[in-house]
Each structure stands twice: as C-alpha cells, then as structure tokens.
Length: 353
Ligand code: NAI
Image (tube, rainbow, N blue to C red; front, side, top):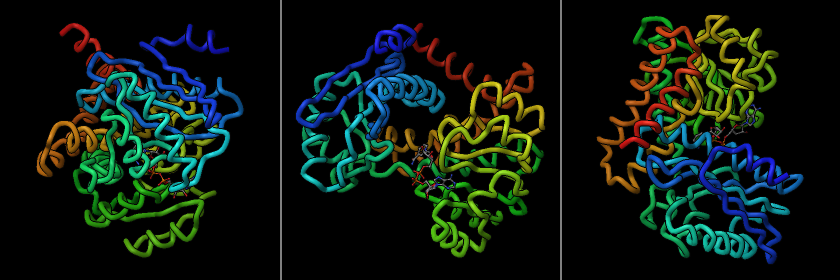
C-alpha cells in the first residue's frame, strides 16, 4: 500500500518513522522545495491505518505547494501527520514526549521541512517543538513566534470576500451584503467582526449552537441552524468549518451569488467547480482566499514585516483573486483551474530561476 501511494505521488520526498515508544506513525511530506523550504502544519489524528495517514500527508503537502505559491511567500509545500493511537491531552507529559520526539525528526531534515500548527496542534505545541528544532513557525508570541495565524486568515478572507463580491456584481460596497458564515471558530468568528465593521450583515451557523448565538449577538446578526446552511438565502456563503461542502448534492440547492470561505478542500471534486460556474455562482478558490495564515506566519516570523506591510499583503489576496477571476473569464475555464494554473506558473518560474 505504501509503495502504491508513493509511486503515484509527484512530490520530492517523504520521511516515515514508526515511533515505538509513542506507538505513533510520523509522516513528513516534502512536496516541493522549488520556492523555498517546504512549510506546512503538523496534523495530529487517529487513523484507521498508517496508510490513511500517509495518504493524507501526500495530498495535503501537495495542496500546500499550491497555497504557498499563490500566497507569494518564499516557501514550498510540506505537511506532517502524526498518526496517533489517541490524541494526548494538551499539557500532558504524554503529549510533551510525543512532540519532542517528533521535533527530533523535523530537526533531522535540516530545514527542508518547516512545521507549524494544524488540526489538533496549536502554538503551545509549536513552543515544545521549538525546544528541539528551529524549523518551526507559529510559536507563542512571548517565545518570539507569530502566534495563532487565524487573525491573518480572517483578515485575508475578508479582503477576498470584498474582491469576489466586486467581481461578481461590480459593486465595491458590501454594506448591504449578507454573508452566511458556516463555522464561527477561530477564523469565522473573527471574520464576523470584520464584516460588521464594514456594515455587512452576518448569518452565523455552527454545530455548537451557543457559539453561533454568541457571534450573532455580538455583531447584530442572526443564527442559522447548522443543518440548514445549504439552501438558506444569502449573498455570500463562507464555508469556515469543514471541507467537501460543494458537491453535486449541495450546489443545486445553494441560494447565494458567491462562495468565499476559509475551509480547506471545499470542492468535492474538480467537476464541482464547473457546476458552480454553470449556476452563475462565483467561487473564490479556497487555498488562495485562505492563505492569510501562511502570510501571517512567514511575514511576521521569517520576513520581519511590520503591521503595515502585513496589512498590505493580506489585502493583496483580493488582488490575486481578481487576477484569477480575469484569467477564468478570458480563457473560459473555472476559477479553480485558473488558480491551479497561477500557482503552477509561479512554481515553474521558480524552477527556471
Ligand atoms: P475551528 O476549529 O476554530 O472552527 C471551526 C468551527 O466550525 C467550530 O466552531 C466548529 O464547531 C464548527 N463546525 C464544525 N463542523 C461544522 C459544520 N458541519 N457546520 C457548522 N459548523 C461546524 O477552525 P478554524 O481555525 O476557524 O478553521 C476553519 C476552517 O478554515 C478549517 O477548515 C481550517 O482547515 C481552515 N483554515 C484555517 C486556518 C487558520 O488560520 N486557522 C488557515 C487556513 C485554513
């Protein structure tokens, strides 16, 4: 199974370690270092079998190559998966042991791979990893890191929503636009604040109804039941929870003009981008509009940007999207295809330089 997966993958290398003391399969996928060290988060998760963890790392590290290229930061695409028997509690000695042992693996790659937080990992975990390797981003601010990237993701997403709405309707004003946020966690909740500030209306949905209620109340919005998101009329649908929300089942029922959200892998498959376009719904490719997180990490922690520079680069996500929409219009291709072409061209240019 490992052989089949690796033979079909077009990335550069994978480090695989079975860590006997923690009974954890550790996978580090280095998909591309053409534009810089392979950077991407460490996902900690329990899988049915190690091959599922490997499959995830291959897929996710490739997606990171595209995201980093579209973001215009000096990094390539990488990702790590810790396939654990069970996720150890934050602050536990079990977790500390696991992360320090994993940090040894990251360090042994000498900077080919630079890690960060992902599903089930956060800044305190990056602090621990930082005890054993320098190849880590997103440590706490008091440890000299850039902290949680969610504020960057949310602000970049806000700029992306404005740009997408402008391209779809010709209007730069979003004060009478209603945005349905699916998932008001770290990113969605902050997005609600940016929207309120711009005068836009907010509909908040979350599987945790208390969370949706809290966000809606704070920004003067309304709550939508988590099961009723697809089909609820809105101007902009912003998926900010889970992937695969845009499929042949859901797209015919969408009642929005624009889909623009932070969730990764929103499309069920490539054909779903065409379905959206046939319905006249403008789709902002997920890895372009949600790149504020990697911009936040690279800008603050590696490139030494000040806040003004960060604001300008996050606003640049809107400009990148407009370029992608224009390519899609001119070539008669989907916005997802135009985004992939944009990222691939940047990687190809990096290979030649
Ligand atoms: P989070 O875990 O803080 O928030 C997710 C929220 O969605 C939670 O409140 C959860 O209760 C809710 N939720 C889960 N399933 C739901 C469903 N089916 N319907 C409605 N609500 C649901 O996650 P975070 O950090 O806000 O990220 C959101 C999405 O954006 C994820 O897909 C993540 O991979 C992606 N993303 C996040 C970045 C970041 O900087 N945090 C960067 C790039 C992408």
